Length: 112
Image (cartoon, rainbow, N blue to C red; front, side):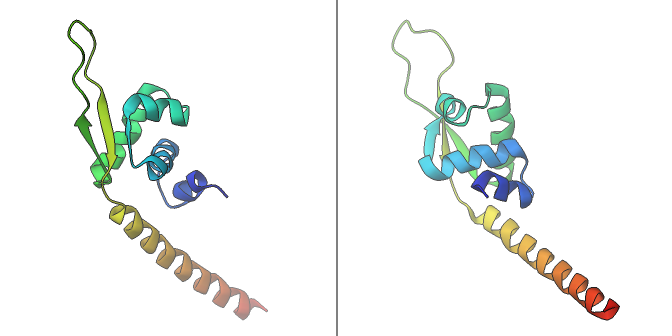
């Protein structure tokens, strides 16, 4: 099982899981590098970052200034801020799965 699948099982959507897996390796990257590194399109990366930012996992900051005469929006840098919210999700899911395991096992034992 890969880390993206594991994060999906824990409740993250596919895009959030993919972006998070990338950022766990890089810690910090330009948004364009996240797109290239994950194979996701820009709108997908934006959606994934929005979800991770809402959880408090990442933050966006301005990149370097563009050279004079260079057009376009300034580049944004994504920074992996903390994994605490993800750890809480993992712990809550673990407890949920253990409880389901106990209920199922109890029911199966009563049936045999």
